[in-house]
Image (cartoon, rainbow, N blue to C red; front, side, top):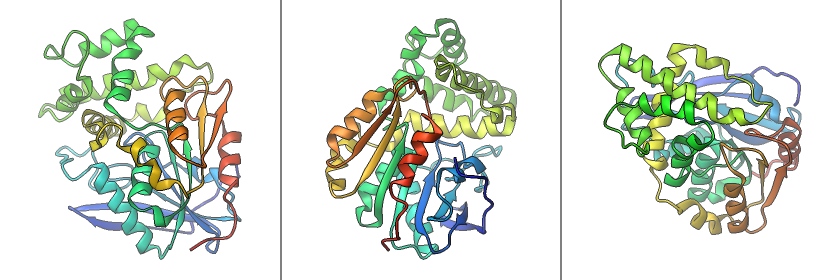
Length: 317
């Protein structure tokens, strides 16, 4: 990756519904604008994400999505209302931020959940997107949610049984609807119930990527407040399949026929299986699929930087 870099500007932007999103910029103020969309949902941005981009070529924009990171109110607050936290709200927030920063068009980059948001945004605002870089893509469909929360139990049966039992007695024996069940527990009035549910959900989040030997634990899961906010947001979005009709993002790829893009996926990514990347590639005329052999979720820094370097030319707008 590129060397560490510090922000040259940062702030909070009011986006409505009582929410303010945290944003920062770094790199070359006159460079091509690029926005980085974090995963989760709920992970928030980290300094390492700045290093995916050439700081001499790009004006790098990072933001914490509603309820995540430094944005307020936090999904970890004792009373967290997520009713105004949907994919449509996040898409609108991106447009407000683009206008606030005086950006005409930008390269949109996302990782994991961030690719769902990137696609939803690009399909709604194709005239504002120069190019897309999608890393470990997902579309957060009902089928993908069931894969992560239920089918992965075939690989980790003991861990999955603990995960399933933690959802309580009202869940079907096969584990259907686990995201919705955990979402309910994570908003329980009893803080003990909330904390136990957050820990069990995040334990499972650490389990399923561990099929790849290079997987390293997410140290932020040791923070109880991060666990709660993350688990609340991810179960909220998973329980509603990202508030999108299944298949909508694949059908919408025709709107991006003139938009260049690179899809980077790991061959051994069991959390975001490569068939998702393949389906996007087939539906997206002109896209390039980079399938990294031996790589897991998040692929490799070399492959990601090679993809972002592809679009590190002069700004379009």
